[in-house]
Length: 219
Ligand code: AMP
Image (cartoon, rainbow, N blue to C red; front, side, top):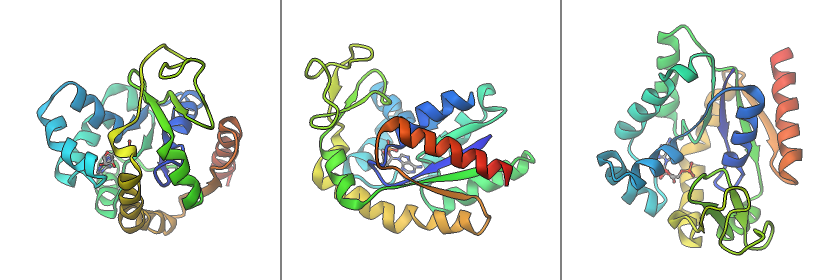
């Protein structure tokens, strides 16, 4: 299956993507994670991306599309993938379509995670992420780790992503509305969009997502 996950920052895309990719046996490809890995390794690409990310704005397509394409061309993605955070604007969606068309492939579904805006700000401002694995996510109020600052799953250090400050979150939301939301209409015109609520327990949202993908595949 080739799936795109969309939703505002704080919808739980990373968390859901990790579970869904495991359930569906496809790699989870997150452009945000790829950028963060490049930043921590100090690569040229990481240096280019960092300033944009810290400001909460999109990294230019000239950098992003090539990086995403390279990752999708790895052998583990031959039979499918779950894209998390890519595409993030219509020109990236068009580039992805071109790429898939050249290989006689197509997307199976676009899973749209819906969450109210006030909930998003609450979720992100208290979010703490593991330095070892960004799908290990905690919250100062809603999902406290057993030991403050330490990941329950792997013992890694928990930190607040620089782009999770309230001011940057507001900017990221604005970017989401103006640049990313239009891809939902773009994919709706192709009959690919399935929308689910991202509220409630993590496992309930995963269950909803799996059911929606199954219904979609059967339709
Ligand atoms: P995420 O981890 O998906 O929330 O992404 C964090 C940040 O990385 C975003 O706010 C952007 O600055 C950058 N980013 C991630 N994916 C993309 C993309 N597809 N296009 C441009 N910028 C991206």
